[in-house]
Length: 283
Image 1 (cartoon, one colour):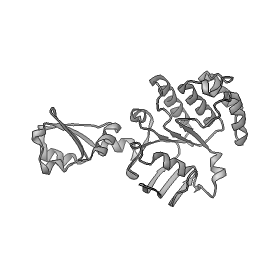
Image 2 (cartoon, helix red, strand yellow; image 1 turned 30 degrees about the horizontal axis):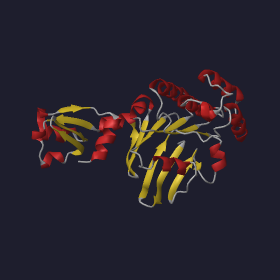
Image 3 (cartoon, one colour; image 1 turned 120 degrees about the horizontal axis):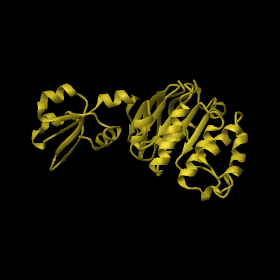
C-alpha cells in the first residue's frame, strides 16, 4: 500500500474525526469526499504531519509517516485549491526556491510541463488566472517524480475545460502503476470520470471506503409516489426526499425494496453526488 490510515482520530472543540481507516494501493486514484466540515482537509494535514493526530497510525510507502517524514515527503506531490506561494514572485522565481528541496527535481520535466500548460513563467503569480495557478501548482508537484500526489480541492472554481485538462493529467500520471493519487473534492462528477476508489466521510465518521464500482452497485435510487410510503417502508432508506411530485430515496437492499413496493417504484443507479446528498439528508 502506498498510503494506510488506521484508526486515526483527532479532536477539536466541537468536532471529532473518529477512528478513520482507509488504504490506497499503488496505481490508483482515490476520491476523498464528504460535505464541507467533514474532516477531509484535517485528514490530509495529518497525513502530511502538518497537524498531529491524537491516536492511530498513518503509513506512507509502508513506513510510519512521522518517523520517516523527510524521506516520505520527497516522494509526495501536494496540490491544493490555493497555492501556498509568494504571490509577488514570478513563476520562475518561485520555482527556483522550491526545486532545491527535492533530490529528484527534474528541470527538463518541469520545462515540459511549462510548455504543455503554456505557463507564462516570467509573470507574477498574483497575476495568473485561477486555471493557470492550478496548472503551475501541478507542474511543481509533478516535476520531482513523486510516487503519491495528494490533491485538496484541486478543481474547485475551475471552468469545465481546465478541469478536464487536469483530470487527463491525473489519469496519465497513474498509468505508471507505481504511482497513486488521493483526490479530495466536492465535485463528484470529476470522480465519476477518474476515481478507482472512493472514501466517503461525514461529520468526522467513515461512511464508505472501497472501489467506486462497488459503491455505485451497493446503493439504489428509488423513486415513486408519496402515497406508497408508510412507517415500515420508509425505514428502508438511508435518506429520503419528498415533494408534491413524489419521493426519491437512497436504499441498499433491492430485495426488500421490491418486497415492499413491487412495481410501484422506479429503481435507478445513483451517482456519487446522489449518495452524498441523500446520506446527509438522513431518513
